Image 1 (cartoon, helix red, strand yellow):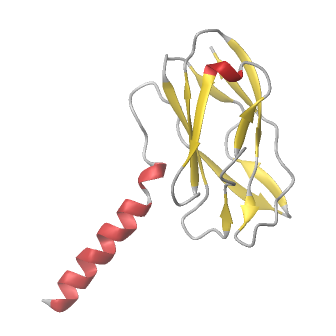
Image 2 (cartoon, one colour):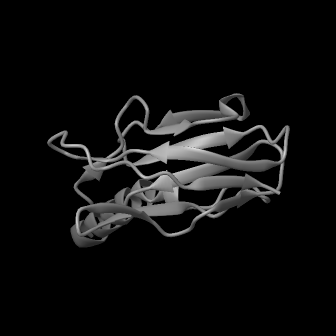
Length: 131
């Protein structure tokens, strides 16, 4: 009985920590995973394509990563910043931005990530494309 309860609690904890990786509503782009390769920030999709109004774009680091998003300026858009409203998750492992999708085009953004000790990586500048 104790082993079953412990296993169930561990499973709930594991699944709840992965909720930021689950897809959102229909039309949302798939979540974008960030990783670090030779000290450089890498995303698993670039650009990110959006085709619906109020789509939620999510970036995340893997569960056991030692990297976190900074509380301020984790994702900043250069042009068209009025198109996007962003927030960092409580655990700083993911960032989500709502794309208002009021105009089409390519929007360059800067994404930042830091080690748990606060040492920042070189930012990356990919695109979100509103089709």
